[in-house]
Length: 314
Image 1 (tube, rainbow, N blue to C red):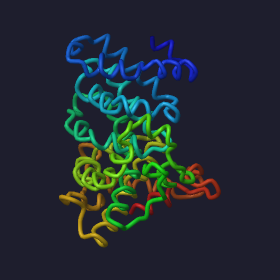
Image 2 (image 1 turned 180 degrees about the vertical axis):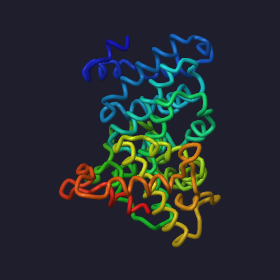
Image 3 (image 1 turned 90 degrees about the horizontal axis):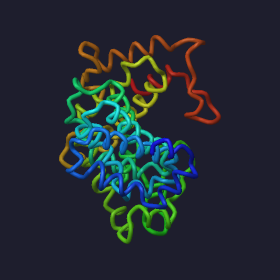
Image 4 (image 1 turned 90 degrees about the vertical axis):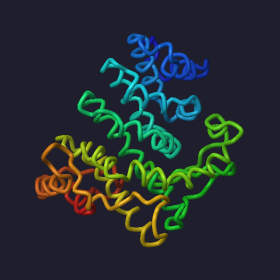
């Protein structure tokens, strides 16, 4: 079945037939499949493939509960590491390719505590990396919502149905609202009401999960990698958290229930012996100079060297 979902046209046809809802309800979430290792693995691989064209399919996937199901499969339900890897990759793809990203980020933040409860010592490194990438991709969007809630940052605007528009920080491009059809598919008749509650929950999610010490450490694992693209995702998330910690505490006093601190003050471990701040210093030293890699995709006009990105964090 996973081989059938190998093109956008086929995936869209499967989505129209309601396949995402079937996989979520009858395979991943259903208690009777707890010991069906092959069935869970195939379901996760198929759902991951449905996330590949997430720019088109994300509203239906989120409406079907795909994000929560994928997180559950990756962190606990899959006893097979291949199935867990497929589920974790699906989480990352859904966040990476969704447009706008904010609804997917909110869905991931709501179940991020499951990720933090995972026994990372028993998880395959690929699963851990993919979930860390998903957390890093979600963080800037959640930070933006939290800053809007605190009145520190203005929303980029809302569409006619009240759903928050995507911001430049969210997807790296000009803001564009969620269409009415997509919002209806994602949230049904309660789209406007649920969207209105996103900002109220964002600060709490940020303080209790993504912005917690455990959340920073989980994302900081990406900095133990030798791949610059993973470093980029982690540092952008940490920059967003630093901005939130400074702005919200200065302007609004605190996030709901507190919990968010400047990640630079946490001395978070990214390995058994290496501190996050030490790794950032290493990256800063290693990437300074004329041969340092550039990240032109961050800014279409100006090439930003890696060293300046790390300096912005430090």
